[in-house]
Length: 280
Image (cartoon, rainbow, N blue to C red):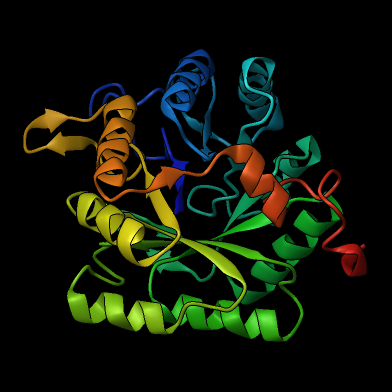
């Protein structure tokens, strides 16, 4: 049985002061490649500028992507289109011209403890269409069963087409937790024709990852979501990846390679068979 590992190394909230996350492009490249040596299926990238601030600008993403591809051309790469800091949809979509494999797509506006991520329905559909124009596959992010229901709705409307890739992220204060009843409800709302990984924020990460191995197609894991490996011990991405490998080995599971994920239709559409020809 093959399971997906989606590495999210940096995110928007990590700093040099609060975490061991890679911040600058050279650090991100080095850490992603080190984790890929151990074994990951894809990587979910956020970019920072020369001051370490969050940025949408494609030139910073280009440095990261080219640095990774130079040494690991097969790795599936997702870029963030987050609305947490930049609400202008055109700015958020700028990076798509680099033709990554996937682009993140949160299926609703939502709150975090100190800020909000704005994703109105019109913007969600606009971003989907922009992704399809560049052959980019949506990396759908859902934080509760309502977002999964909206995903299924867009699927039935043929707005989302082809095989879906979904991260269900648990443990946010304003959305779904990690109680057994909540996870059961989440599973009942899994859309058809989808690969689904479970991730968790903070202390919810490890339990969510175990459930992702047991009940879904894999895990989303990384310092973006959880800056601690255990209480009072800061996390390194490489240690989080090693832990997932230990768990999967004990469960008799293998980690899916990037090449397999692309063959299943989750790479950039320019090279994987035209799932979205009807959107061109």
